[in-house]
Length: 202
Image 1 (cartoon, rainbow, N blue to C red):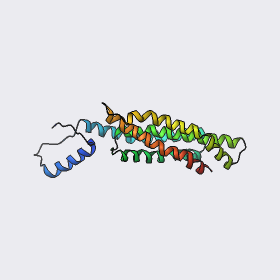
Image 2: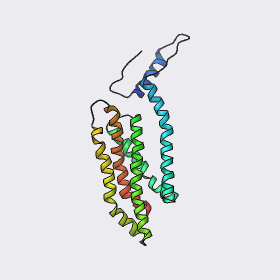
Image 3: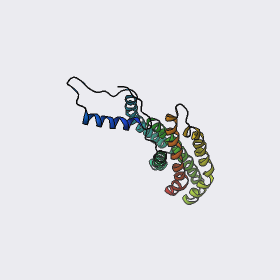
Image 4: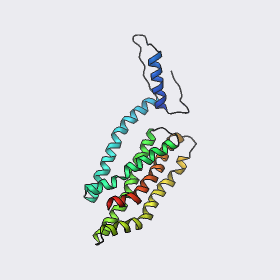
């Protein structure tokens, strides 16, 4: 049986179809069902993502620790990731999009930018403290001076993804979730970097 799914995600469609077939279809002995095609690719890619995402997060943490030599500061910068996830999930929900493999890839890209903004902020505050400023002074000045660089990093990434988020041509079903996740996540992670990260540092 071959079919094309339109107007909804393939994962939930197959789940619903499997439930309906289990209830209503009695297969004769020797017969079995196999769900292939795009759904099979989705399952394979999902299994890979379950490995790739934790590995990417672990490597980011290791790089932060080796850069700053402090577990506390590595975790401090890492707080950008949960805020980025919240924004990405919220953006998908607002646009009525299911979580897909391309959205998963978008989250990995988003983690990188969110962490980069945290690195920009924390490294500058550390620099000010080495110059002899108190924690309160370093945090205040760091937040003011690094406002523009953090906003520019976030805006460049966000604006670059706008055409993909609005795409309607061939391949748009892959581009839209990825871009939506990055734009939504950058809004919340940038707010965290500019407002909450300096407070947590203090």
